[in-house]
Image (cartoon, rainbow, N blue to C red; front, side):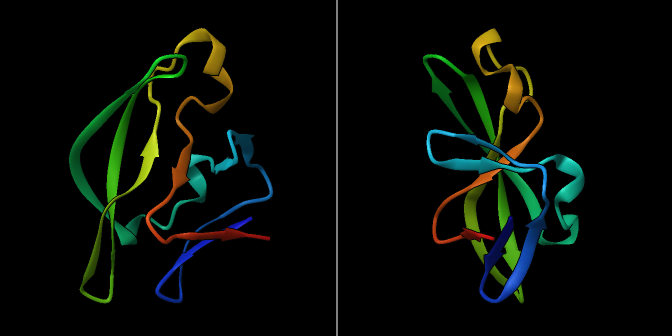
Amino acid sequence: MKATWNGVTLAESDDTVLVEGNHYFPESALHREHFTFSNHRTMCPWKGQASYLSVLVNGEINADAAWTYADPKPEAESIKGRYAFWKGVKVAP
């Protein structure tokens, strides 16, 4: 799977975990030069607290476009430390 935004690859891996229609990429698959800090957090009743990263491509920012569960609830252990995308980031084979 490959995650792209504005024509740039953000992450690429054959090892994703599919949960609720979202592909979760291992952290090692991220092209870290395209990510920047976000202090945004959300809470999922069954997964736990999500932390976000913003995406930065060619000077354009996509705020809070990636998220991860660093310490998920036991039911979501399979996505611990993995990253998923939204806000216009395309994820496809």
